[in-house]
Image (cartoon, rainbow, N blue to C red):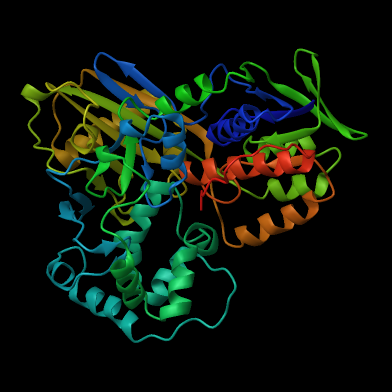
Length: 483
């Protein structure tokens, strides 16, 4: 029987394990062990359920436009628990010049697709709007090389679009700095739109006309009408918990820190920090790039050196609960982002109890503020009490929140958020070419071809499929359409 070992129990590693379980369900002769160094599975997906609150230490949702997670939920039988954002006050704000300004309807990231909301918005000045409108006439870029997102936005839409929209959104979603962020790795669709349509505005309008008004992943009534962001009724950890339950033939081991990985003949040998030795025919490494580099640097120094070029930055999320009866702010929206030009100490704040149902008891309010990221990393690396104090001060000044919270908890991820810098696609391509020399070794996770949960699920699934093919394991399984 062939043996596969997955090192790293985040969502990419778990998706890989589930793909192998599918093969086992079809009588494939393969065994699989997942080794996770910490005391829990799920990686950054970590839901805390307490006193009627659902708190997310890491991500609180995923985008519906990439169907890998929706399809996984269907297979797991929990697609009825998928939940979209609330529809009563679907607004998001930009905090600019000491005011909350609604992101105008029809603004696709930073590209305007509706005329009147764009013309009437206070988010951009008239010179800024005219500059954004120049996209309709500017020629397409002839060079195919990668560029930064900041360079792209300035070139197509101007500096205001960058400072007031692109930068705060990228900071809020990816904890990234557009000045160093790879367009090709993060938003290849923008490259494709410019190449095909020349104008971003014309291209986004054309794509909008082609897009169905509702997604079509099957009968999932719980998130219709169409919602860009999806989550789970009981928090994102529901995916992790259900997946593990439905992998009875997979051995999941926590507190299993890997110390050494070696290729010996046609097999791989793994030594844990306890001294225990394991053997496998194929290994899937779904650890962060820097940890993967440490495991392979003795015998694959060139790949390790390239992996070390993939940077990580620190972030912190601060969850605050309040009594609704005494909470003055109406919270009519999903929250706000803060441009770097405002020189604030938070990058965004999600009004969680207004964005998703069931995140707090009816008589409670739940907020989540964000600190750090690529442009203000040092703020997320401060001690917990300092972060708490600064966040509460920011919410007082920005939202007028003077109420004493029922709780205030800080979730820090020091050097925990991967960054796709310019030329990241070329770097990954070089790693993949060198990896060919190491048969039976696969790299999965957020460091390579997509940071979001759907990308990680897709990446983990594909690596497991590749490992099964390499091992010659035969199983009649329908190919999952996770593109």
